[in-house]
Length: 283
Image (tube, rainbow, N blue to C red; front, top):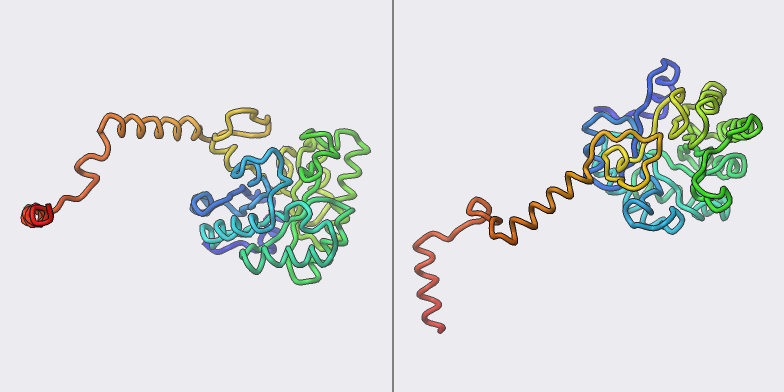
C-alpha cells in the first residue's frame, strides 16, 4: 500500500471521498491500523491521558511525543503520520515552534505536525511551513486550553461562535496549513468550515459533513468504560475481552494448568542422566 500524501488528501476532498483517521500510540496499534487500510494516523497528545494516566493532555513532553511517534512510524511505515505538538512546544515563539516541529519530523519521521489553535497561532504555522514542514491545524475545542474553555464542552454553538471558528480555519489555511481537524462543534459548523476552505477538514464530534472522521483508538476498540461521549461508536469491547483473558491466565497459573507440556521443552533422557550424574559429583 502506497503512503498517501497531502496531495492525495486534497484529491479525495475534490472527489468527495471520505478519509479514515485514527489515533495510535504504539507499534501494534499502528500496525493494525495500517493493515486495516486507515488513511491517516494521529499520534495525539491524548497519549497523556490514555497511556500515562494524566488528568489532562498538558503534562506530556516533547521527548514522550517523539518516542511514541517513532513507535507508530515503525508500525505503520506506509501510512501518513501526524504528530501532535504538545503544550508549550510551540506557543513560546517561532524558534521553539520550528525546532520542536523539526524534532517530530527529523527524529520521529512524522509526515505532518499539528499545533492547536486558530488565528493566534497562524504566524507560528507559517514559520513551520516556511521551514519546509507540513502542518495540520486544530480548531474548535482545543484541549491544551481546557482551563480557558471551562472544560470539555461543545464549541461554536452560536452563529457568532461559528463565524469565529470559520475565521480560524481561513487564517490557518492562509498561513499554509494543508488540512485541519475540527473538534466538538455542531454539525452545521463542521459543514460550513468544510465547504468554505480548500484544505481538507477532519472532524471529531463535528458531524458527518467533514472530509473525514477522526476517532481515538481506545474509544473505537472499547477500552473506555467510564464516560463514553455520544460521538463515539464502539466497534469492539476489548476492555471486557482483555479482562477475561487476564482472569483466565491468573486462574490457570494458580491451578497449575499453565504452563502445560506443550508450552515448554524437555531435556533428552540421556542428558537428564548426565545431569543427575553431575549433580551426584558435586553433592
